Length: 418
Ligand SMILES: *[C@@H]1O[C@H](CO)[C@@H](O)[C@H](O)[C@H]1NC(C)=O
Ligand SMILES: *[C@@H]1O[C@H](CO)[C@@H](O)[C@H](O)[C@H]1NC(C)=O
Ligand SMILES: *[C@@H]1O[C@H](CO)[C@@H](O)[C@H](O)[C@H]1NC(C)=O
Ligand SMILES: *[C@@H]1O[C@H](CO)[C@@H](O)[C@H](O)[C@H]1NC(C)=O
Ligand SMILES: *[C@@H]1O[C@H](CO)[C@@H](O)[C@H](O)[C@H]1NC(C)=O
Ligand SMILES: *[C@@H]1O[C@H](CO)[C@@H](O)[C@H](O)[C@H]1NC(C)=O
Image (tube, rainbow, N blue to C red; front, side, top):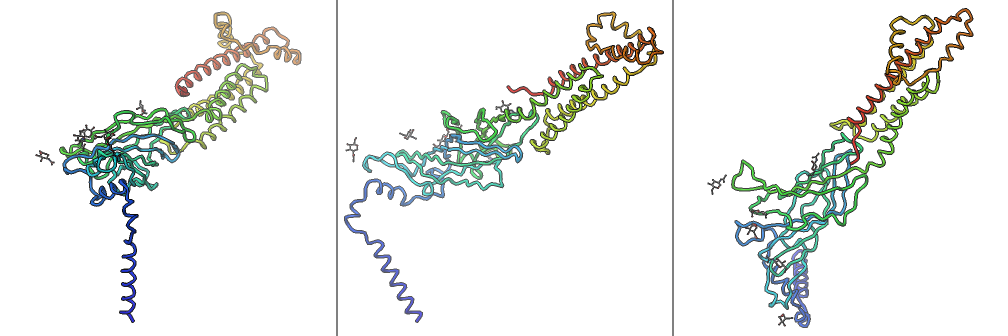
């Protein structure tokens, strides 16, 4: 039974084999020059070895990136580039004489049939699978030049610095090279003209590509004086699309700063002064929370806008305390200390009177004067207006200090959108 099955099987395979090769003669004659060329090129070709006849010579690979799309996740610190990578090298086993093959000078061939360089991204994001092999159709020239233009995505790690958020620029660097071959075996270089093309490029969400700077690192290391490990380095300079975050955070914080400062110009007696300041304090809390949502909290450097709002919040709190203090000062009825009287007279008589601009309404005191009839007394009125004058001076000084502090803070912290 078993022998019988074997016989049937082998018969079947014999028949199949014969019929598979059984090509009609007119078809065989129709084999054109390209098929002939293909057969002759690949009958003894081995794509696992470097295509050089002398093993000591290098395969020079020219690389050109045509950037198509870039996306950058600043929270995850990952960076991906979609590009067409043009690679050109000379395959010494793939040249032919065109006159022998119907003047064919170029031929397309699938990349898995020929030797292709494996270009690795050294700072790759290991969480994303990235094939080093390319799968595409390549162009052969009769002098052995091979050109492949695969469409490849690369994902790398890019440390972000959020110091100048949201007006930050990030430099993301990608290092390409051969993982195992030395530069004496596989030598990656740039195309002589235009190593990076960004003409046909689309910005990813939230980021704008300013520039790509290519650089070839020759790769001399102390360990191995006779070999090099060259790398192609690309620095992508990205700029955040800051209009959105600026509209959400930066411009409103400036509004709140102005509100805090201007509130100091209002009369202490005026309830709107305290409400404005309290509202402004609330606004600071809101913005600190909002920034906290927008930035990674584990970032190495704190965005300066956060520090600015923090400092501004402290100033705002101080302005509230000042308002409370001044309103209690001006309600005082007992005679002002002597030094206070002489201080106010000194300030108001000298050039200092131009600096004291908040003239709190003294009618408040005259109201009191009519209410407390016993106290209708020139001297007492003068003394109580000393308190008000003093409050005026303190308020003006604090206002000037606030303006100075804010100017300094703005100069130090708020980055310019260049
Ligand atoms: C590669 O480039 C080097 C230097 O430019 C040159 O000496 C060498 O002949 C080139 N190799 C091939 C296979 O063309
Ligand atoms: C190839 O080109 C040569 C010279 O241009 C010409 O004489 C010949 O006829 C061409 N052969 C074919 C098959 O076209
Ligand atoms: C091979 O031919 C192409 C196209 O004619 C040319 O650009 C290239 O320089 C040639 N390469 C060599 C090594 O001769
Ligand atoms: C980013 O790269 C550009 C261009 O190479 C360089 O001028 C700039 O100093 C770099 N910035 C940082 C922060 O490394
Ligand atoms: C690799 O290419 C570079 C740039 O063309 C060249 O300077 C260097 O000599 C080459 N290295 C080898 C080993 O051919
Ligand atoms: C490098 O090459 C020199 C000269 O060929 C040789 O003397 C030396 O041993 C080599 N060094 C290494 C680390 O291979």
